[in-house]
Length: 139
Image (cartoon, rainbow, N blue to C red; front, side):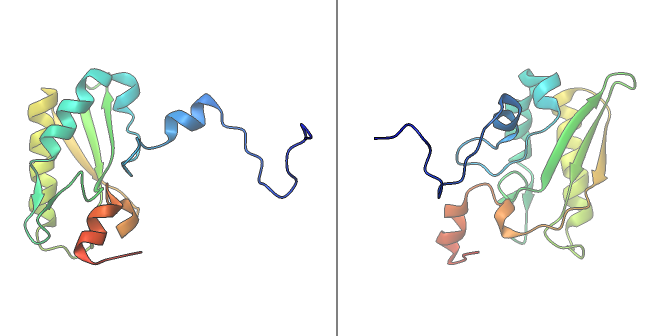
């Protein structure tokens, strides 16, 4: 056997930064800035966001992948949550954004603002792809 890599297989070299940027196993959730600066707040924040449910779909904003980033500005002592909606015309969008803002403010104990992200939501952002199969949806 040769020690040479198979020329037909793609060669990748993962760096620690690449690995840190990957979502957790079983999760499509993007890595938030707060995970680096305030890791002790992440689990409680996720738990809080799971109580914010889209009434039309019946799923929370974490499961749907709507929270794209959370960061804390230490100079302003303020949190900023970047969110998207499943559709730009979501009738519950304003209420979801406000509920998420209030929940983050409650969990983090500081003023919180919501910023609309520019990403377009798609089903690949759902936390668990198996959930979509239960709905009978595939992408």
